Amino acid sequence: MDALPSRPSFEKARHPDRGPEPIAPDCAGQNFYAIDRGLRDLLQLYLEPNDFRRLEPHFDRLGVLAGGRLDELARVADKHPPVLNPRDRFGRDEDWIDYHSSYREMEQIAFGDFQFHAMSHRPGTLGMDRPLPAVAKYALQYLFVQAEFGLMCPISVTDTSIHLVRKFASAELKDYLLPKMLSGDVATMWKGTQFMTERAGGSDVGAIETTARCEDGEWRLYGDKWFCSHADADVALLLARPEGAPDGTRGLALFALPRRLKSGRRNAYRIVRLKDKLGTRSMASGEILLEGAVAYLVGEAERGFKQMMEQVNLSRLSHGVRAAAMMRRCVNEAMVCARSRVAFGKTIIEYALLRRQLLKVIVPTEQALSMFLFTANAMDRANAGSKEAESLLRILTPLLKFRACRDNIPVATGAMEVRGGNGYIEEWVHARLIRDAHVGVLWEGTSNINALDIVTRAVGKSRAHRTLEAELKKLLDQATLIPAAFRDRLRLALDRTLAFAERVAADAALEASARQVASSLYHVTSAILMIWEAAQPGADARRSLYARFVLEHRLSAQDPLEPRYGEWERKAEEFVFSERQVLLAEIAGLLEA
Ligand SMILES: Cc1cc2nc3c(=O)[nH]c(=O)nc-3n(C[C@H](O)[C@H](O)[C@H](O)COP(=O)(O)OP(=O)(O)OC[C@H]3O[C@@H](n4cnc5c(N)ncnc54)[C@H](O)[C@@H]3O)c2cc1C
Image (cartoon, protein in one colour):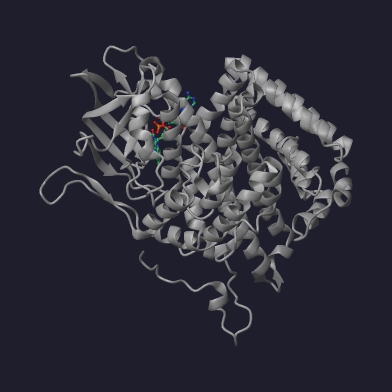
């Protein structure tokens, strides 16, 4: 492993004779698990106690890595993006991609040490005698992404490719692919990816032009894939239209495309070029030309799109988690800065306007944390056979992807602003957080596509909002420690949101309100989750204050010509920014005032 150029930490940079350093520190060297009170509390709620006990040392270890070595590696990898070599020195089109050693070391941590790609699929990762629950996997993704976002794409897409192969491939194809894909040996394992988007269609998947021809008993693919992240993966899951199949998504089949053939030769496709991207710069996204590449049909030819949607939905959940993670990094950075930077003789956290700015960073972050853990918990229950949980997952996944990815953008900018001018300088993490945040509203469906999925399919067709209603009302009833008046206001907000969602789902003329519906559903769900969480024995009660912020500022009418912030908020801030545990008895009055 190459040594990284060393950067002095804040403590080392401090000169003993000079007194306090005028520039506020960053989070270098912190344990991102230990400082995340919300995560620590909620993992105990959403994980089985035994699983929590066995996995906590790994959360802690990853927390240390994310605030330390991984963060350093990520910073360097971002500055040394991958390079495509289209030909070798003999003129053969044997393309390959060079990565900086910092990226390779991160791969070793992810695929070798933690084995993120395999943890849902087989026992034996992190010392567990069975696959990890979804809650644990996504909590680990959340810690990892607080340091490195780019590599989470190859990690997640390998995980989701394994899911598709396990669920849909023939026994023969499974025998061929799974041992390689599930391996923890980074030097020899096969990593996965997923190529759908073409020039003619990203959102409009049915417009895909890649064709599949059966030649001498083998499927061969011809076409041009326009966005291919993790472009040099060992096996890509992709959609193509078998010759003679119908137009639209109905005619698309799912294939597994190996990079190398069984003979060891390179398969007949080329990475034509790599994209020069705004963010995710450590990871290679390219364009791929399929020139009669050999591929294996996965599952039934007529069900390709439906099968691929399973991968898309898993990725959407991971994207929500990644947004939550990047927002948490923003909170950590903003808080450490706000508590140390001095202006006009006071630390900046003492200023009312700055505290308001911090709340706009904190509240969406806490909402996303509750939403992703609840969604992952629904996945665990669905995997155990619950039909209700399956229906819940149907609506929660696009809700999380839609809103958390959108919130990530203003949160990243808000945290940069807390740091002032230094936040704009590439040596600090904020510029990368801002660049990386934006891709969340594009891949695996733009905001519009996710909002339409929620309204037309999850609400209109699947009626999953009714399962969500039942679940949320149960939680409201259980949260008896929360003042009844506040729970009644949330119950009313829920009823109104559901009626609004049904109205929009039933009337095509209201389609332009789909995003408003999606946001309201997300806000009311997260607010109810947060009061339920706050009411658990031993929990930190400040989550119920976040719920009130959501109710007042996201789900209630406001007069733009009146002050937005009342007396209760000034008092609530004292608790939000205190560094100790907050008890319900102390703040119950603030939920009613
Ligand atoms: C860095 C990066 C990496 C990527 N990696 C991959 C990858 O590995 N694999 C892969 O398959 N794809 C990948 N993508 C592609 C990504 O999924 C698509 O860009 C995305 O789905 C949008 O498709 P599009 O670019 O064709 O935009 P379009 O579909 O043309 O959309 C353009 C605009 O029209 C809107 N729009 C479209 N239809 C509707 C509608 N019915 N109603 C309202 N508005 C609508 C969209 O919301 C968007 O705002 C990647 C993209 C990026 C930026």
